[in-house]
Amino acid sequence: MTKYLSLKSLSLKSLSPVVALAALGIASVASAGLQLRTVSCAKSTDGSGRCFGNFIGFREDAAATSSASFRDDLAGNRSFYARATVPGATTDTVYTCIPDATVSSLWEQALSSRGFFDVRWDANGICTYLKLTNGSLNTNY
Amino acid sequence: MSHTSKTWAAAVCLATLMTTPAALAGFQTESANCYKNADGSGRCYGSLLGFRNHSGANTQASFTRTSTSALYFNAALTSGTTTEYFSCTADAVTGAQWSKAMNHQGYFSIYWNALGECYSLFLNNGSQYSHF
Amino acid sequence: MTAHVLRMGFLGLTSALGSAMACWLAMSQGQQAQDLRMQQLSTEVAALRRVVQAMNHVPDSPSGSRSAGIPPSLASGSARPTAEDLDAIAQRMATLLKESGALAMGSREAAPPAPPPPLSPEQRESVARAGSLVERVVSSGRMTAEDVLEIRHELSQLRGRAEAEELRRRLVVAINQNRLIPSDQADGLP
Image (tube, rainbow over all chains, first blue to last red; front, side):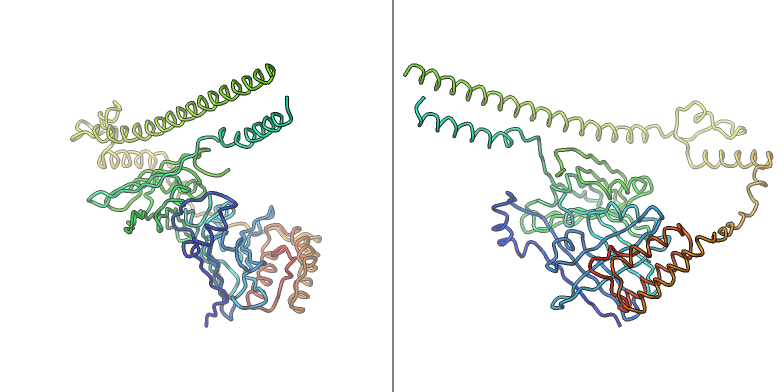
């Protein structure tokens, strides 16, 4: 049974009046296309799970410890590592996986990615699927 | 020079200093364009920042790659209350350049044919197109 | 009073010069932008022109002897190859390769990957130490930043080895099953 621990999706459009007021003192953004901040992580009791969202969503999440990262080191160790907090919870949860060979072939792209990602892993902690999107709704270029 | 004149001179200098960066700002431009022909072929072009900041509420453009080897481009352009959607999957030649599109932050132009295959991709990373 | 008028005049002159400079800069940048746009358009038009020209160069039907595998129209460089031309070239290439014996050499089965070299005594010690550290953090259910650094240090001696990957995977599974909670200060996985 899959238990969704965190699912938040925020459209800036719905907050446009607030954002506009807040932005007055910072920048002059007159209008905007579709812009999203998304943070979503879920896992089953066997440990398999999925995280998707965009970097800007995790970075600007209401929970202070939220983060998501794709890692690589000189020894070739690669991993996805994220923290997210269930709405209403007081503590965060860690989600992590190690890419299989197929997903690893996209890892260099993931390391320089700035937009949307979707990572899924199995009960053995192996990332078995990765989707990356470079799009105007996910990144403030 | 009287005290008042000195004060005015200082104020003018200060105002000039404050406005100088704006006057010397480099060229910056944003645009978002897409069109479709009757047979479904078409083109999208503009800067990713232009799509992000476009006045249309649903306007967006994105390049996607998955670990299952799917490479595709999606866009939506809102004009007034109407949103039109555009999409293509990369052909072999365009697909070979997809990594560049995945890291791109500037101006792009992408064409697709009636079969929905992206067959031409032009990228331009310029100071006028994105924040650096 | 005269000095004041002169100063004011000088200020006005400076202001006028400043405005003129700003206008010149704006026009200059506008010109640059226009040039850039023209350059961009020229590039795209040139690319389109090349495509159209290539389409116009497709011959009706290549004729002539194919005994050498290369039709005359292609040999002269005046036409793009058709599917038939490519088949002919491939056929000719295959014949030549068979005659040269290169295909027989290439058909050998690929050798199985060589087994990894045995662990050195130092590496065996690292595996043992990292293993006991992993065991300890998983048993305790907590992993501090120091634990991460310590395990990472041991694993760094096992670069690219399956033994290291297996130990890291054990941590991943424990974390995902909520049996192990990494400290907020921990820098991710070892």
